[in-house]
Image (cartoon, rainbow over the protein chains, first blue to last red):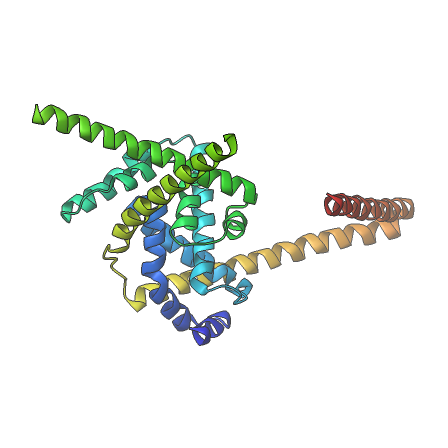
Amino acid sequence: MDEWIMKAQKGDHSAFALLFKENYPFVVKYLLKITMNPDTAEELAQETMAKCVQKIQLYNGKSKFSTWLISIATNIYIDQCRKKKREKIWQYHEEIARKLKWHFESRNEDWNDALAALAKLSEEVRIAIILKHYYGYSYEEIAEWMKISTGTVKSRVHNGLIAVRKELKLNEEAESQYANRTTK
Amino acid sequence: MKKQKVNMQTEQQNDEDFLVIHELQRGLDQIETFQIQTPDLQWFEQIILTEQHRIKKKLMKEVFLFSVIALLILGGIMMSLYQMPIVFIILQISTTIFIALYIGVKHSKKVIEHER
């Protein structure tokens, strides 16, 4: 892998292609988790690769190559969200996640309540929670990638967890009420 | 007594957080099982070549623009030196003052940030 990176930094496009092919599923799956939309995830993965070609000289090997890709992908997605908000193209979070839900159901898999709750959160909060509690990155790393303070990341993660907890409790209550009604 | 109650509340909250995080991880693990179709090597190579070509084109454009602007500025300065020496002197003095002020303000900002 290191050899490929060095070759890619020298402009070898074959080494670049091998690097991207190796990391493609990892990046797409990460983007799928934060965007909750398969089409957007693939589109952003392509943009991430293009950005990576531009910035490869800046990669210093301090972190894993995949971590570096995640930081680029996060930045691109946050920028895209800001642009969309500016253009006032509002889409409901639930609507965005509908396609992912459909993918789950078409494979006869349950659409997890936690995923539904996660889809209802704003992008900024969702990204912070996923990076912290799924990928295990530090608050400092997340703050650097999202260009915000460590305190803001902590409060976003904290508030996000509270929101998910509330949502899960609401779902549980609704399910138990439904079960009670049907048994009566 | 009050302290004990607060401790119990935070413990309960931590347990609840742990459960929520566990649920989230379980949900996200399901996404991890998704089959992602990785395109073939040629597709990646094509994207890279296109991007490298775009970067090269952009660089050439920027170098050209930079050279034209530099030539224009230099031409203007040379012309003012021979045709209107007073304008040349005023320009030189004002540029020196501007650079000194800019560096001074930037340095003082850095010092304030460090003190914080």
